[in-house]
Length: 213
Image (tube, rainbow, N blue to C red; front, side, top):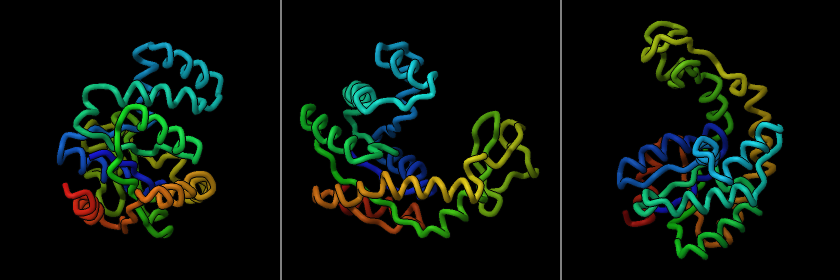
């Protein structure tokens, strides 16, 4: 399957992506992951991205698209891919459309994960992360066995700075201003699948039914 996953922070894009990749061997691609990989590999694009990030600048759309073009042509993408958190803006969506056209790749759908604001706030403000191994817990639905201690590595489990209620409200405002318009863009392209995402299992079932997978 070849999908774009849209949705606000806390909508469950990462969880849904992991469930979908387990079905058919598709790969989950996030711009953060491919930027870090490009920097680590020391490619020309990676060096340019590293310079921008070290200077505290945003990585330009041209650079992001160059890295994305290289990533989509890697062998593991032949089985399918899920774009998680990309594109973020209309210009990126238009550039991606052109790139996929040049590569002869057709998307199955752009899936919009709809979750009420109060559910997102509850999900993220109760999330806790291990500072050592990155394991994720939830004080309500998936707590650690010992409070504040990671079950996997014994590291310290904390609330991230960007997961306080104030920080989440700011992130949602940014999403609504910059990224939410993508929903209308893909609706106009006839590619949008709107799904109630309060249950990840429901999302996966709806996607599989939609694309006949």
